[in-house]
Image 1 (cartoon, rainbow, N blue to C red):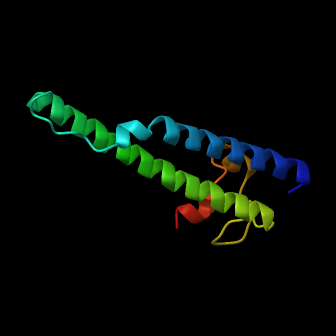
Image 2 (cartoon, rainbow, N blue to C red):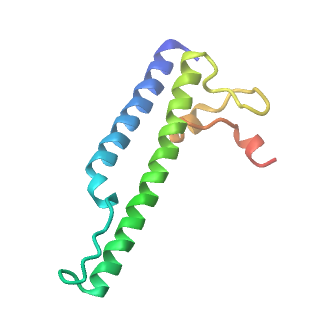
Length: 112
């Protein structure tokens, strides 16, 4: 993989990582502990707030997983291991990396 292609993937990965951090920051309030003050909010409103909090926490967990995958891909880029299948060692096709730059396996090895 040439330097220009590596730079393009690095930029793509870093842009997505920045976006995930921004989403996490903007969604932080939704993950806060829900106040269960029965005097100010009805039972259904509290249940709705708890459900929204659970969804926000699940979304954050998915963001954390994706962030970890991106950081691992960036590390592979710096170690010149990016774009190679972890299982067979062959090149991962560029079309696959363009769609999923965190991919660690080629299509053949995914179906094993």
